[in-house]
Length: 269
Ligand code: HPA
Image (cartoon, rainbow, N blue to C red; front, side, top):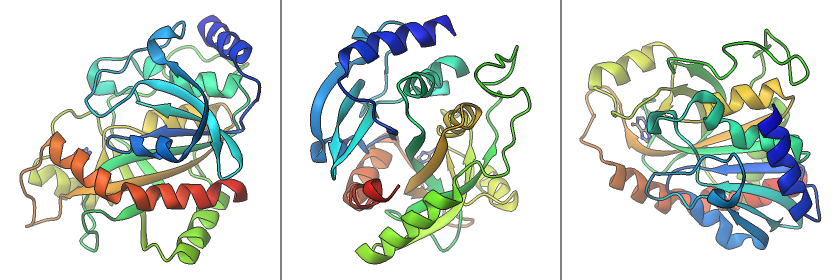
């Protein structure tokens, strides 16, 4: 808690504004910042208590700016559990955003699609998630000043924000899918049997992030909207070899659609 407050105060001193909307950019989706009027960019390694990102395709800075007239905070580069960070480190940026006044969060990620109607490059709006991480960022003593011990998750992803996303997608003529995101630790991609199991469990896409961040955001009373870019397919009978490079490439190809959608949504949130 002290670290969260300390980092919040450090950043608050650097900023002239208090954005209400935060965005976390997923693997291969860092290009959104090109469409942002950047007011301040603060590399993670210069922020006290901030973890430092290690994955290719992640820039590793906190960016403040305006997009479509709206002040936002963007995390360009996220911390994954598979890198060896604790759940507290993975979710630290969310805690800090809350200190700065964020009350709405947009989480993006690259994910493998299990739903047989999905195609590579599709955008899936996250309706719900299944936590298959071997952990939860709320394990351990609860700080009741931050949020409740037993967190309600009946609406982890804001229906209101989802509705706005649908409307914007329709206006922009962007085809979107909707579904359940299964969060796993990685770093292996799934075996065909695992993809099949996740589909049987009710998952539409699988990825290695987002779930811990959503849990902490909800704990702190932040509304969450999540979207997955489908970068590879784990459909029964169609599972092909996949690499991180291919995931990044597929994400980059689909990225303009995601940027357009987020751009359009921001003033309506
Ligand atoms: N599985 C897990 N994580 C992923 C995948 C996948 O197929 N694609 C992108 N991230």
